[in-house]
Length: 332
Image 1: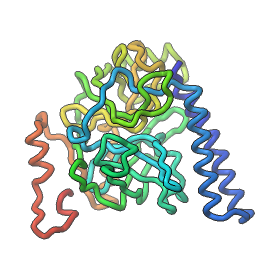
Image 2: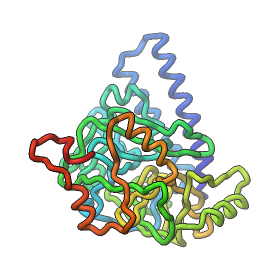
Image 3: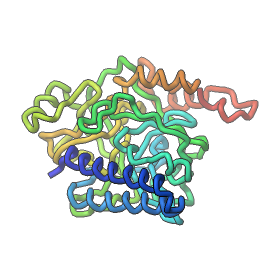
Image 4: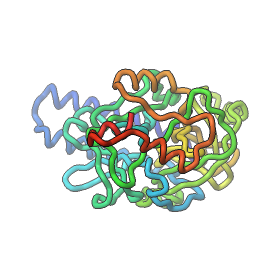
């Protein structure tokens, strides 16, 4: 049985222990920086094993996709001592920015960023491909200030990278406007394992198309399931029998007509049509996104009033002059 809240509580307990460990190390000053980082990686590894044993973690009914068709999807990885570990997904929305969920990136401690351990890997559908893949060091993370780690309310975050997304298969995607109308079906992406008995994430990016649910109906379903579960305005629901997404796909995009409309957040019983997965609603976070844009003097592309075709997407993406060879001219 898929129970996101139980898993998340267990994760948070591990994070608390991790924080206590780091604090103790700082006070006692008896470990080197190298050993401190080793302990962080060890704790995260144990956390993955616990999660795998207690949860079903897979994208249901999906198929492998080519990054050339979906160049906005990137993986979140840890690199340490020539080893890499998959941690989730994010979506390119600007030359130097990506969007994910706060829960997905909550494990990232400042020391991990300082020591260049966490990256966004783009330009490849294979998250473990360090040859074709382009790695971008995380500069800083802006989680939503209203994020609740228990209810997963306001589960949203913006990530800034040091190296720009400029690979041949790295492209930004438009984001939903505040007045976006949610209806019909959408495609979701992730690297979660493809079957409950296969707890390890897959190498190649998977995708599946699911139907968007009426929010009121989704609330009613989850209120019957568990009185502690609240589907709020910051969330939207989607899913079909045998087509769904689960934990290891956290942070992955929900896309409709070349527009990022949601981000994979949480859910119950993967692939069960009665309980759709829950996503962070991009349009709901418009005020937070605009504040982040202002603070960083950038502008993320939003959908137009009409449906974007591939040609519209290409024209809008490349519309700025690059004659002065300034990398920042490719995007706002």
